[in-house]
Image (tube, rainbow, N blue to C red; front, side):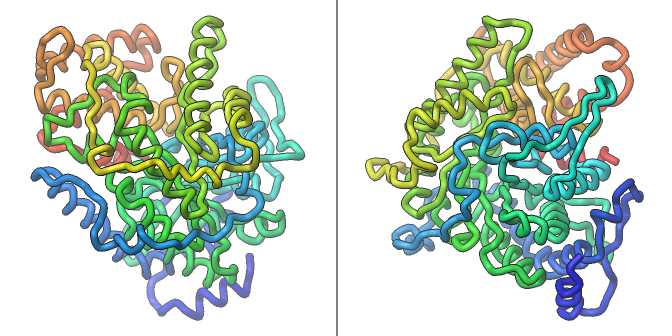
Length: 541
């Protein structure tokens, strides 16, 4: 621990109650909840939590406007920002080439395998791929602390195999939780802390010196941002942390996931707010689809077809991709592509070949569009993704590809894709939603289901489409409406199928009944829950 940094923090903090740890003491808690980390977290909470709550209230106000018929558009008040010739600051050497990035939760084995994978970067995820139990938060931070210091190992109890870091490892990037998520195990003066500030503060306070010693830095992915004002808040948090820890301003680098519809209309502004800390933007495709449903939930004309048919070739998604690439490259920022959710299918060579062909086509599409890199969820996809980008890229990135011919309008971003809503699609939403939530309630936030890696973002699409179809009485391809009675029949049938797939013991005991009940309640609710993980978080320990 840096005594000078701690003294600097204490000298700036007013006297008063310190941060209170409400969660139980766990193995290695003291290594994570260090005095410096807790003091930084308390400081950030006091300074920035009021503004965080104001911005969440602004989200709710804007949603009410959408519910009443308003549509998002490019902001008149920030026209000068969009018209300006500014650029973001250059990124460090280890962020110049990001052609393949792997993502995953912060469990020990995953971290080792991901850092050892033949990729440029690993995003360690405290958000969509992590169920934020107190144990996962503490162990995840301890695992990353070991990874930064290259002391991390893992022994598989079943096989006795020991996992260690290779000599060459990927660049580490951390994704904290979004602004909306709380951390109920920590409080200051009775106030519950922000999960985002918790994940950020614990990581940077405990690791900034070790990162610098290894020639890298504190790099982050920022999720669920809905406006440039939310990006401004993050930038102010970065500056405050850098000052408190004695780090040079601009050391923190952050890539923003453009995964909400409102953020797509403020890409320039988001980069501008973070320009000294920016490492680019990312097409968070699955959450973006969820956001599209959520923002227009009360409007029947925005019904989406089956999830499987809403591909990146659809006009509204293609437009969003092209606008992101053009915006980023004009500003000297990286444009990172979306997630390939497929995983290798080891027991069916033909199905595996077809799945890998889809991955290859998707990654070639991204590379040809001008992306500087892409995401995968499994090391087995690294070679395919790398080959696709190597076939197009002649340097470490495609920043010179300016896409000047692109002219995306608000209408392009709001174009509703045509297509069928099928009973099979509804059944898949139920089956995936229930099984994912069951795993999440058991502490597992990243779940392979039906040859896809599902996380909170894909589960959100499932439960949002179910609500949308039921709320608007959508008709499926057979001409029948989606009613409460029909949903009940489908839910019962899919629970029977899950019973056969996972066994009666798991279905009738543990948290399966809770998961099914929560999906049912959220689907039938007259109002739309903003996030699946908010009510579910109340059930976590």
